[in-house]
Length: 145
Image 1: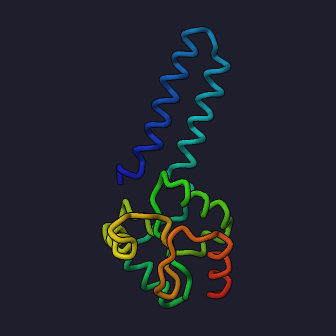
Image 2 (image 1 turned 180 degrees about the vertical axis):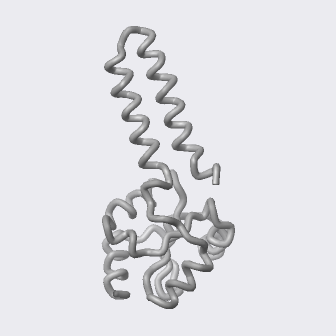
């Protein structure tokens, strides 16, 4: 679990250090603005932006029942963030698996990506697609409804 929070925590810490330096030089306004930017970056790279993750086995079971895609992701991945943002509200209808929290999910991703943990990996009807176009994922989601 701590692995998913490393980048957001580092961003807040770095922003705090830089802001403290700016305050000491007499620029509290610039310090506040810069700290806000770092906090926003930390928020965007945190697991909080994504729908609640479930385990890979549970996601696969649910997908078999309802036909909705499974998305394997990890925090800090800009491609995962792009997919999440471009899907908008529809993202909550997918089954999200954080590979840093679920060893079975990480193993499933490595199995289809030549041993690499390349994300986002989207599984639709037992077919894996690495970093697919968000429009295509949206289309797959509408087909499953």
